[in-house]
Image (cartoon, rainbow, N blue to C red; front, side, top):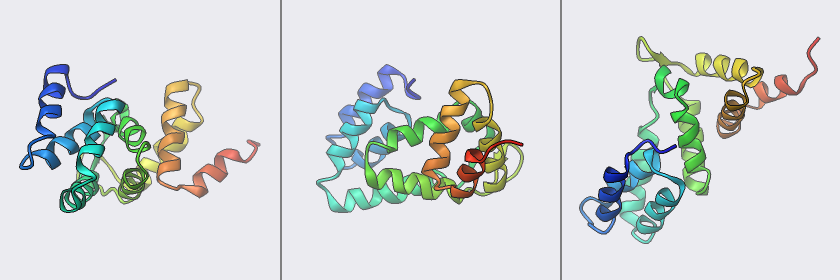
Length: 153
């Protein structure tokens, strides 16, 4: 499932060739595009050192706050899955999610996020379980993963 509709995706792909908009278009495709479009975005930006540095910075800053909606609708898991295809993007997204901050109603702190991930990893719903493990691995949550591996008494 893409977060960006087909018309917007087509426009963003065209903007990848525009030096003034390349970084913003790449960020939008990394967060809301399909896997092939996210890979294309990375490929178009990687040859340009300054733009790649800017993209990495913008990507990290995109995760200072995680809303409950982004978690519940699977967007956070989609972001990790898209970032998984590029080692530097996976590292940035994982570190950023591990540092999310509570900024008021309908946002998650790191503690709340871990609690939800733990509960979802133990749920019977396959999608919730898969997404929870994906996020836990990206965040390098060894303690939660060890607790999930321990036998239930």
